[in-house]
Amino acid sequence: MAGRNTKVTPHWFRHSFVNLLLENDVPLVIVKDWAGHPDISTTNIYLERIYQDDSHLHMNKVNLFR
Image (cartoon, rainbow, N blue to C red; front, side, top):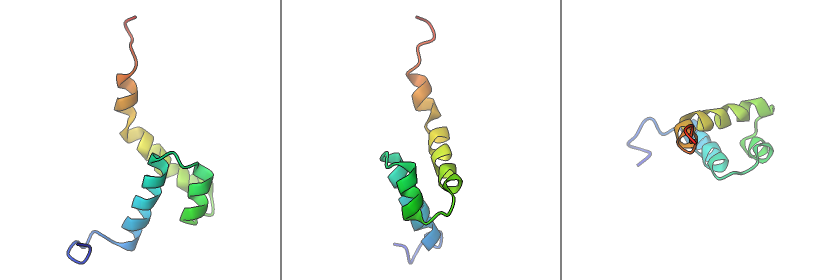
């Protein structure tokens, strides 16, 4: 499958791996080490994107009219 899809690159696998770890609540500092990021702020960018993409799920839980 990867041979037929030119968008599947080593970076794509790395990005998917980091996202999978963060979406499964692996602590940020552990993901940083496994991803080989020298600075945790790089790893935090992934986490911010995940939260941004899921923000509608969190807002659906809020009842503003109690």
